[in-house]
Amino acid sequence: MGIVDLLALDDALTALAQIDPRGAQIIELRFFSGLSLEETAEVVGVSAGTVKRDWSAARAWLYREMRQQS
Image (cartoon, rainbow, N blue to C red; front, side):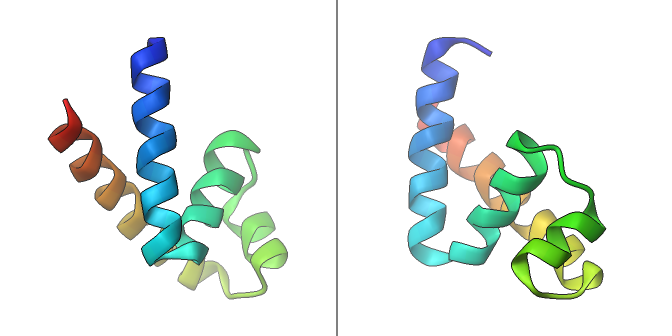
């Protein structure tokens, strides 16, 4: 991943945080901090199932957003 990709990811995460703050937080905790589903659930204060659903939706949203930017 190059510098341009990191900037695009940052822009996409910022946009996601505007429409889905919890989804953006879950992305940050899972991807950047390396927390498990269970650890993330504990930090966020929701069930592991909710984290799994939000993680999946947020990743799909970021993928679409970054594909549109390129």
